[in-house]
Length: 427
Image 1 (tube, rainbow, N blue to C red):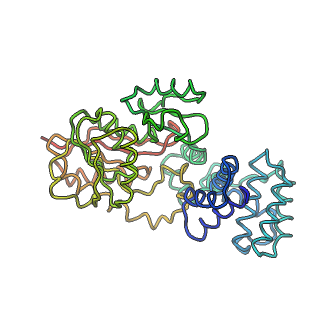
Image 2 (spheres, rainbow, N blue to C red; image 1 turned 90 degrees about the vertical axis):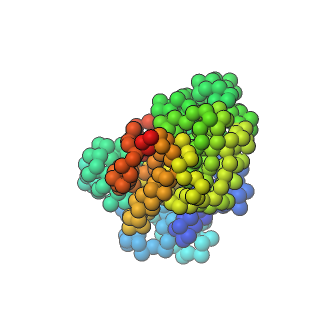
Image 3 (cartoon, rainbow, N blue to C red; image 1 turned 180 degrees about the horizontal axis):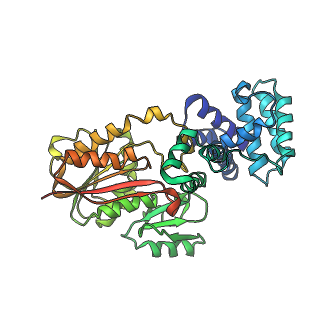
């Protein structure tokens, strides 16, 4: 098996089963026994097609006489994969991309191998003279150029203006950098940068978060020096910034109510110098195992885990925490660069999220002791899940006051899009 076969299998799984790209890629790369180089190429092909699907369709439509919707779905998957290689990857010969696409078509059982050959060769012939995207300066143009659904483009243009929306969608289509938070038991972020540099790994301290290090070289976190020893853990700088805003201190009692995979609990334990108590909860008990594994690797003994519905916290937890973190389930529209298929979510399916988020915030409010902090956060940029939920919460809980609130857009610091609101309960 090769990288193109793996990428095509993952594309089909995303289309047929609504699979997540990262999970599908992991499964099929293991099935096909790809080495590191081929696995990297398969990832680039898969994410490249998902990130540029609508733009690829725009160019393919110029080379196909009938509407793309009339093609067999697997044939369209193959055409997109071939067109991405031809238009975006200079190091792959056109002949290799076309020939493999033709073979994939034959293996799929389709009779469209001739069509695939002709269409991709036409795309290759015109790649130096591609047609202009129409409606320049509008949401329609952004939708095609950056392959985001029109409803999302219209919304972001109305909220950020054309230039702001352009920057937002451009950031969404950039490959995310690996960012880690330092375990301060071993030093600070600059010392971790030096540790990486001494091993030939380029990195720098984040502009946003003082505990975050951005790794410039590609590769997995587990392969970095210091990972096994627990000197750092993977966490986006925007998420780390929300924890810094909450300012956990030594000796505190902390409830991380929607914890998995546990980054905020880990950063709290680091900032608290492993002195205090952290209860990390999640609705799904099996997800808590990852929190426990990371806590063990990092040497944090103050973290314990328990399954819990954050909207219905246990009675015994009422009024007993100095800091409660509510990183609520959300639409994920701030992490499109990491999960590119999120952009294609049906907006109707997102309509019920604010009610869920408000119920969680309401339930957890009772767990905050007088004088304590409730940190509400999401990884989305939608105001109805962010500012609107916060406003409704303050209306219903006059004993809480807003101390800090911030929306971080992905184009600002090359991070996830993230929102947080620090609220203090009156004493």
